[in-house]
Image (cartoon, rainbow, N blue to C red):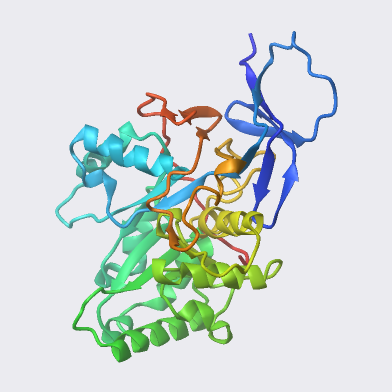
Length: 373
């Protein structure tokens, strides 16, 4: 007997650059067809469950980039509550960063990661690594176990000169790795030093043609210094509104910025776009571009044939109609979705959580972006 599929009718599909009226067919957790079906519904067709999404926006699920690792939470109830908080923001996938200690063997590392066996969401592991370990053999060892993204924190400009860039280039060319760089959050690190670290890193990665994601508040808007093929900028919360405005001005152009939904803040005191345009920009910044940056696009971050059926259902009457528009909207505090679907299964429906624990999958087949965002 064939597994019953699902068809979502009557909704408005939101993409990174526009909206369209379309019905979505789902089978085996994947989107198999998208079209506006004008045929009369067949009440005797039991191959597809009919879902009425009239009056709904249908968004691709957002991707959470965590600043505090969930795998460190040992209390299951606290862990599930953290998961549900992400779901209530519309997240259907997450990235967690694991920092291994030198004493850990492979079984011990796997044991540290077992908390995500309770995950409600699909998840991806990134590895935090010291500058001293940023060399070919060390990274190759991790890549042999399925890891392709590495986070490195720079403490001073001198550290960058110790990196063996030629070995990193070989690995990135053959294995499609990507580096996530951030400057150490040290109050004693002067602004001039932080700027010097950023400039040296940018020059080195341009010279060696290495793809990198940077957490930086200003460099993202100095486009004359950036290579859209090599650099993506993760925007901190204080400049996400500026980033959305930049995306609006370059609606069909390249703009290599991304930010997770829980970091997005929007200043609505001065109107600069329509409410539907703003929703498209939010999808581009916090779903599509984030999925591209971590190598999950188009499987995640899009509603298209072949993608995972990760869908956020948002009532049109709730979008920017029940908020105080004289304030800054902070999406880490907003719970907008009416329902959330992950891989074709409900994890949140009609503002109620579905008690499915451990349905999230660990995704190892991530391939960091090889195109302009």
